[in-house]
Image 1 (cartoon, rainbow, N blue to C red):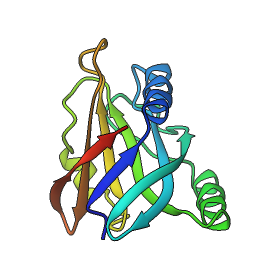
Image 2 (cartoon, rainbow, N blue to C red):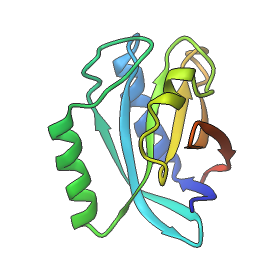
Image 3 (cartoon, one colour):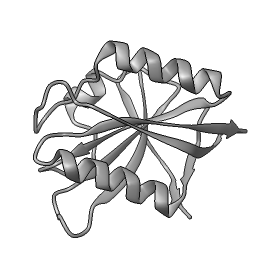
Length: 139
């Protein structure tokens, strides 16, 4: 079980840049890498398209999701996290985020763009409607 998540500053910057280009809509994507004894290390960032084009919800196109998940598997990586932005709210899972958390083995990384000059990132495990924060380490 994933207990904490590590990523590089350039990876974090790439995620934030992607999400800022989606603003004022929510942006989303996958993070893949390795997980050893609950420590996840991001290797690849996969920006995805929010087909809902909504400021309060996101969904990825199913065929694009499958293609990306197959690539993650082909590369020998694990799906570590699903990320998305909250353009107008804090980096805390919404009721909808909790309800739609369909990947209990992955973390959910939420980036708040509420303060445009200082995006805030937080990671959570969401299992069976229960939310647990986990450490997010940016190196």
